[in-house]
Image (tube, rainbow, N blue to C red; front, side, top):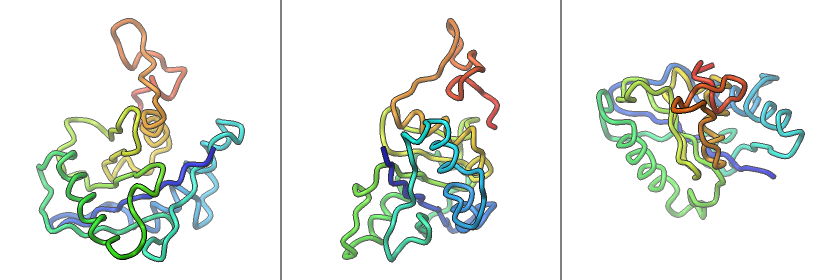
Length: 176
């Protein structure tokens, strides 16, 4: 099927993401010619059964909504920052006829300075929300792993080790 993906690009008061929202759009959707991106690889791996398409609205540029937040995020838990970004995005959308519920998946890109507990990213399982440290938000393996959680996939481990099956993106801890 088709998954409409909205990328929420956090712009906090105190720190910046490592790449521009335009660069992330290219990494995720190939909007500026990147031939290897989430959209192309999810389609290839699923033999055309899964396609990520960028969210569309006059408010978004190539599937990305830049979301300023009135908070400092250094040291704040990534989940707290996701809540702030979500609330600010909802405020931006008021009166536009667009809702965050209109999209299949929502990817948050948040600067590394938030507290991530050692993780590169996280996602609801199953669900529609994922959150990425900006230094990992462009890494194909991390993107597909977290989107796999959104689709209901668990880690593919071995015994008591949740990341022990390196033959599958859901069991590979490489952050690649």
